[in-house]
Image (cartoon, rainbow, N blue to C red):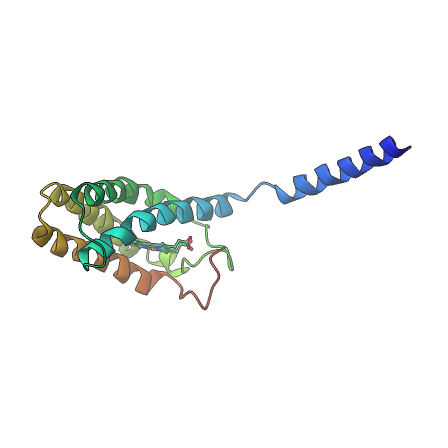
Length: 158
Ligand code: HEC
């Protein structure tokens, strides 16, 4: 009898777990995907910002590695914004992205181009050349966030 109850309890647990792991909609999958790519970009971008502003000592190899990663990741972003991947409350992407797609795509292309040049310039190990290239890249992040990303307090990302 005890085992039967235990089996029932186990079954209930399995059902609950199944409900939690309910498959995501394609829109939610795209949101997860772009969040993941942005997280990895941010992970590598922050230490570069710290090095450029002198908050941490500049380390040529670490910087080159981080710049190379961002250059590799940036071109993965466009596919993270398929039509219909706006889900209120789950994304900070503004619906304007899909209304002004050409402008948004242009910013994504600029991101790929600027991150590629930063990765190239980082090979020199010359911080005086790296700084302006980094600032140009950071400006693209800012321009796009200002126009196409909801402020943190208005929306919750997850
Ligand atoms: C073409 C536009 C665009 C560019 C360029 C851009 N971002 Fe974003 N970023 C967004 C949007 C839109 C979101 C919100 C995504 C969402 O919530 O679905 C976002 C979200 C993020 C997030 C948060 C991810 C999360 O889980 O909420 C980070 C971190 C981030 N961006 C970093 C950067 C950095 C660093 C750069 C520059 C190297 C950059 N972004 C360039 C549009 C852009």
